[in-house]
Image (cartoon, rainbow, N blue to C red; front, top):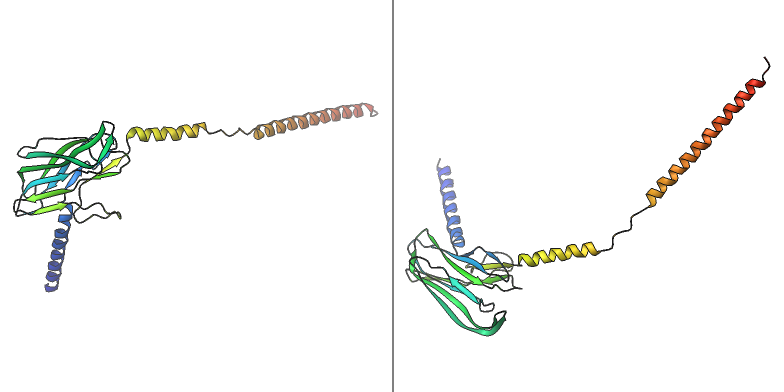
Length: 241
């Protein structure tokens, strides 16, 4: 019994340790949905969970990419929270279909509210147009707790596919549906325009030849049979009574 109790204690401690190590990795700031189409507008929500038992989240600061600036950014009000949208000059002007862009939204800060223990809050943003030729946008985020602690969720995605220690929210960008359809149509058109293989007539010719040969042999056999009957009749008539 003593051995079984020790084994149960070790197992419980190991499970608690594993859960304790796994929970922080799961409780990071994310962006939902995690994908959007290139070249369009999208509404996303930055989902912020509170991962502290002894403190509340009181401030969330999201930085927007300066290398791929967004011309239009608007936020949805969150009850109990104040929001501040900051615009700034870009390190280098960017040419868009709306003209040359020298300023863009660089940061959005939500403050004044609280996210308690075991809770999360979503902060919605509408933005566009999303860049083309880019497969993702990274949004480094700062999460401030009531005790003064600030957690930086700013680690870029790893190239080997594993999760970073403090991953930044990432929005994956996929080709627009129209472009995908155009690619499919082009492929189908190319396949349709390819010269079709000439139909083979050898089997039909062979069948016709075989049919003619069979008819010839059948006619010859019938003629031979008729001749044999005539010869037999003549031979019977010539026999003496």
